[in-house]
Amino acid sequence: MSKILIFGHQSPDTDAITSAITFSYLQNALGKETEAVALGKTTAETQYALDYFEVETPRVVTTVAQETPEVMLVDHNEAQQSVPDIEKVKVLAVVDHHRIANFQTANPLYYRAEPVGCTNTIILKMFKENNIDVPKHIAGLMLSAIISDTLLLKSPTCTQEDVKAAEELAETAGVDLEAYGKELLKAGTDTSSKTADMILNDDAKNFPMGGLTVRIGQVNVVDVDDILNRKQELLEEMAEQCTNNEIDLFILVTTDVLNSNSVALVYGEEKAQVAQAFNKELKDDTLMLEGVVSRKKQVVPPLTVKFG
Amino acid sequence: MSKILIFGHQSPDTDAITSAITFSYLQNALGKETEAVALGKTTAETQYALDYFEVETPRVVTTVAQETPEVMLVDHNEAQQSVPDIEKVKVLAVVDHHRIANFQTANPLYYRAEPVGCTNTIILKMFKENNIDVPKHIAGLMLSAIISDTLLLKSPTCTQEDVKAAEELAETAGVDLEAYGKELLKAGTDTSSKTADMILNDDAKNFPMGGLTVRIGQVNVVDVDDILNRKQELLEEMAEQCTNNEIDLFILVTTDVLNSNSVALVYGEEKAQVAQAFNKELKDDTLMLEGVVSRKKQVVPPLTVKFG
Image 1 (spheres, each protein chain N blue to C red):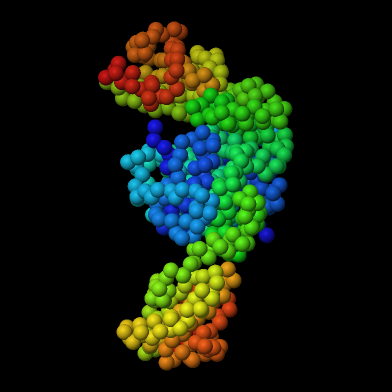
Image 2 (image 1 turned 90 degrees about the vertical axis):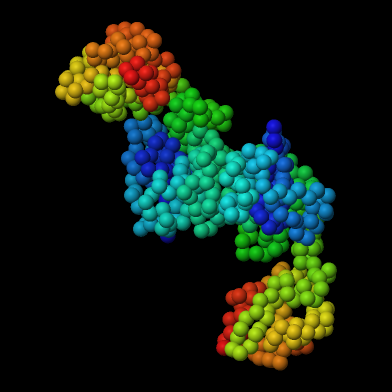
């Protein structure tokens, strides 16, 4: 008999990958024959967690119906986020923490959703309800997912249940929650192997403002010094790209995901006016932006007011 | 602050009514302010259970948005089975044992579905998970719902979990499972207050067969003698209706819901041929139909073959 496949959403993050693994462990302990698979490659963050707890990376599948008639979904339910041939298989179970939409079945099923910060918080509860022990490596993966989804318990989606689960899982996994958490998030935001061009442009957009072309890039980090230590290199790259691409102002917003602050590095003749837009003064071409995390909502509007 | 309303589906059966009451009890014990309401009148069966365990009948609502912004659904999820203004309120939680369809939310919610025979089997589990004691009257209502949905643990939808839950709940409720179960189902199929005309026609349809008009009624009972003891009265009513309404053959199928058998009472000149259609002989105008419960699938086809 073919195994029941269990998988999270496309473009999988740490919760999507690990909840497939942890839920598959639970189902197998309860007597089902299941296999955790993935709908895409693991990120650097997820790979760090898998390597740390010595768990094999799940194989990637692009369709499922050719190998199994039955699946279970974790960390998603909406059809457009799932495997493209989801309509051809029977969904036996869903464990999720998102809204429900674009989902329907022909038959009754097991569906477990709770408005918590992470799917693995729900799965931990299900281990307990079924009196199944959580082994060290499974605890480690669950913990990694909670850290990832809640940005080390700091995101507004984080609930008391997530906090409790994380503390308990850190003990079972034998790691220090804060220390491991920072290492994990750091692995996911590692910029050391990136060129200055990649840091500037991996997530950058041009904004026409008044007569100017303003290019704003953003990079998420755990330690802003990873970027600030490369200031000279980045400024030189900005200068070159401004000349080559007719950009008047280049702003790189480096966002500290743990503390929800940003530092802007600014290049261009009008750089002093950028500082003024935020009622600040430029210091060595940088600008502290306390509480700023959203380019769209917190960076672009004051600049638009300033440059018109 | 307005109370959160909790309700089951339209045309409520015993599970729909009682799961609203039992889930509301659980939610209130957990600190929420909720009220169980109903989307329709209770059946005789449900009323028997409410009276037996001295629980007030929930008030009937036809819309909810004018009195609360938030609701919880039990024993259903599909919009067309719910309150007509369901789109105007926020669904905080769902507990159900049906397929999922025509259901979507804007936000994450608590959703608990399991492929078991009765919503109350899931709710009992939730009481345990939250360490909330089940009082006698709540146990009695839960038990009544399981008996109702599984026809005293005999329907194909009944799972081992339902059986276990029913046994445990009977003890808490202080009733004998079999004896109480039969009384409850009997209350739901009580024909004593019905006229012969009501018994014959409450669920009857005409089928043209060959040149004949065949009218087939069906009535569900726990004790077929409730109907057979009124044979003369029923035959006289059949005779009159055949004359007045140009019916050639009148068949009343009395179905024993506990044992999944039926007895047919037949009136009309061609009555012997009805017996032949089932390879039987007519005995005092009645015909034992072992294993027959479905008019559409088990009664109409052999007659169509016989009469063409």
